[in-house]
Image (cartoon, rainbow, N blue to C red; front, side):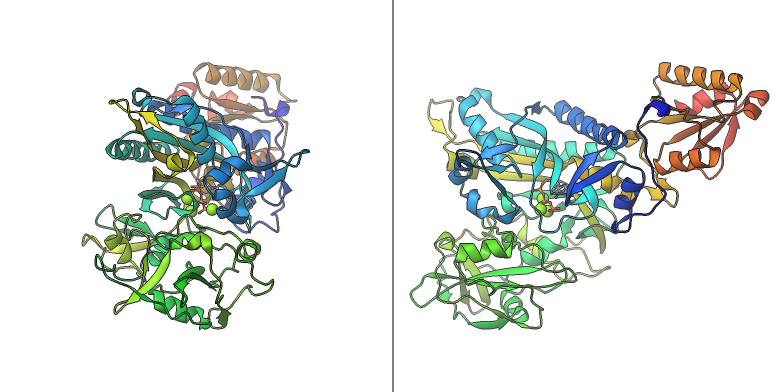
Length: 569
Ligand code: ATP
Ligand code: MG
Ligand code: MG
Ligand code: MG
């Protein structure tokens, strides 16, 4: 690519509203331009990087046996009614109406669509197992879109969905995807950890997140220095409401209080308040045994931004994303909810039954409060390990007894779930088994934030001069910089032929023939993070050398042609 014919548009200004380094550098390098809150255009430069990520993800998914499909981004309401998520998904769901007033949403995820596809496509166990994936634009109406493409509203995701007859086969594929994710993030040159995770609005049983470690990450990760143990601390705190009730134990009714502080509610549930636990939902029962809904909003260092009701076992299905939704759903008066200070009292909704929550009741025994009505523990990945890391600090022993815990911040770039039969059951997906009987398949689902990875990689790989791309993500591997291209014809010619030779040798190369002054040209090349820089100048030509510098090296070297090619291979 000749940069004189490529739309490269860098800027020296540091954008004032960009809070983290990847957002600043992506804007300065001209990789993205904002259209509206959380909605971005990818420039030619940005797109080259995005496509690199996409390619690695696609190749590894295919190598792992997954098959590519492409599903629509606009999805009909009826499909989402089948699983109940038209209501439950909450405010992140962008709802649309067509000219006939028919309702749709812009897909934030595709479990419904793939299950609908599967019920049309799959009829026999002989077609299983199968794993379909796509790389598709998603829309989530995030309450607080920020950090550029890191937490966007419109973003690119790779999502995959697998179908199996037997639970063990789902576990095999889950492991296969877990290993595939590790390969993808390794190939992309990222430092990452896989951690125990929450199943969120997607639901299901076992789940792991893949986090790119970076100080700007929104999640806290606790991991052992002596073993593979690692967990998302937010999950761990929230999944620890107390000892599980004995089988058959009768739980007594909760005395629903009308006025509590967040701290009281948290203490009742045994959930420590922290910046990561922002919201607690409590389900109680009234005198008649009808479920009651109690909500405490906890404000950490962040403003109350996302209400995660999915943080208690069994409530994974029930996730409302904003205050308006909750108000609507509960029929509560406007204004009863609002940002609260953990030290201030919060209002509790009393005397309102919430039919949608009838399955989930909090009871209490001598040991404290519990969730009953749900199959306790069913949804928890190794609850004992998870429960033990509440309030951990650096240096605490790891729950598995091997090593001590370190705490790091992470950016969630991937998430694997064992969904189980929840979607297949809700949508009536069955296949004939070996005995000719209808059987409901079990499902897995596997997401990767393709566009988020671009930003996450920059968080990990940058210096004062700009981005330092890992090889696999760089827009070009090498750049040939021509000093004064309008001047000496010999310099021009040497640069051209080096450029062509590098391309022929399979090195993805750009030719910087824009005619910028060396200082400005080098600043651009460093900003956009090209790994290998070769300068062709009159002086070098005279000496029979090229000036070579690796983006991570502090100094340039003078190399002859053979040494240069050896370096680039
Ligand atoms: P988060 O906790 O960051 O909100 P999530 O758990 O809601 O993410 P998933 O439903 O697990 O996201 O989606 C799969 C992947 O999509 C995530 O692991 C993440 O990498 C990416 N992703 C999710 N939301 C966004 C977003 N708003 N912008 C960019 N990427 C996102
Ligand atoms: Mg989210
Ligand atoms: Mg998450
Ligand atoms: Mg997730």
